[in-house]
Amino acid sequence: MSATEFDVEKKARDSGEIASSQEVPVHDESNGHMHRALKGRQVSMIAIAGTLGTGLFLGSGKALANGGPVGALLGYTIVGCLVGLMMYSLGEMMVWDPSAGGFIEFSARYVDPAMGFAMGWQFWFQVVISAPVEIVAGSIVISFWDTNDSHKAIYITVMLIGIILVNIAGVKYFGEFEFVFATIKLVSVVGLILMCLVVDLGGAPDRDRRGFRYWRDEPFNNDFFGVVPPSKARFLGFWAVLTQAAFSYGGMEGLAMICLEAANPRVSMRTAVRAIFYRIVGLYVLAILLIGMCISRSQPTLLQANAEDTGTAAQSPFVIIIQTAGIKVLAHIINAVILTSAFSAGNEFLYSASRSLFMLAQQGQAPRVLAKVTRSGVPIYSLAVCSAFACLAYLACGKQGANDAFNWLANITTLGSMITWWGVALSHIRWYRGMKAQGLSRDVLPFKSWTQPYGAWVVLISFSIIMFFNGFTTFMSKPFDFQSFISDYINVPLVIILYFGYKFTTKSKIVSLAEMDCSSHYVEDSVVYSKY
Image (cartoon, rainbow, N blue to C red; front, top):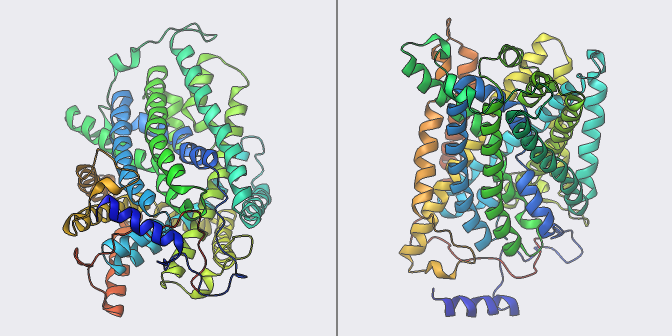
């Protein structure tokens, strides 16, 4: 399709001569529809601050302990670049067709309907379990001030009601809420980076000018799991950082869930995709760099915090830096920021879970009633189902067995983001080949990345390797940690079962390049109605 032909088709759609199956309501106009109420500033801020959470505030300490300052920096830089390439792949498809159901529909349209089914349900499971995980994390953070465990259920209840009310209020209020909390997180991260710089240069009360002392003394982890020789320990410690970094960057793909509710999506999504790579990766890499300059990986407080894995501010490497530098009060402020991050993350995960379930229902791969949308633009039944799953947070208040069950559920979502990133790369490769086979020029794309098609291949191959070795530490444990092995890999057979189960049931076939629907179904200023 030439640029001229594309313009003609677009004008025909605008005039109503061509109707999109995504945009035309099956029922009358009185039915509810998705509201394109998310403004550009909200989309950009959600994209930038959506992944700034416990992965940076807490998880970065574990990365430093495992890989050392250089290993941690390399790991976060490499995974950050890979995730950036993935976002460019996803961005090209999202901006081309923001009326589609995100990577769920892209997987079905460009690869195989069974692939869309498997990717959609895997992503839904990942985010619907992550919502209660963040709620529990928030209740644990509060224990920094209130050590009475019997109060945990109260805090969980308050936060659950809060995120459910924000989601029920509609996307307009959700966008404003997340904009405010994203701004708090962004300002806090920038402030912490500046604080680390001051501490490193000797401006803290202890007047200790650290410089690159820890980079020189112990750049890598020479005794990871007691492995010998040290060169092998250094590599394995660095490799362990890759999975930790992937967990920290997890959530970027959630940007695709707001396509249907973003105003002027082609402009806002293009801006958000560009911003999320440079700013997020830049903030993460700079923060990891300065953390490694301010504290030793073998610092006793850091090792103790990682061993206890409490989820409170005491575990944060930023707090450990503050304490060793003799700075007062800041620990409470950081704990408050971590609390807002956990609440905001739980809110975003509940939103993503309800929208992914809505998209699956739109595709006919979930009960039709879940595609029902209220007049305020809320997929109310999907939200109700996901809110019910959020109540799994109360397992953390139960006896040891219930708590272990909850932790196990939380752990099996570890691979979720990487599987989604892998699926996005595969969908983009197929879409790219389909356009080429049909003689469609990439010049018609509203957003075209210079990294393609090689970027998608790099993402596909790299995350295949990282996922394969994700649970390598379970083989180093004595005795063999069978439960951790299952939680580290169970997502993979889950996706395989979903894929082949749907394929055998529906007799779906891999979409041929010649018959692939590579066109855009987006009509300017249109809204998305439920198909059912």
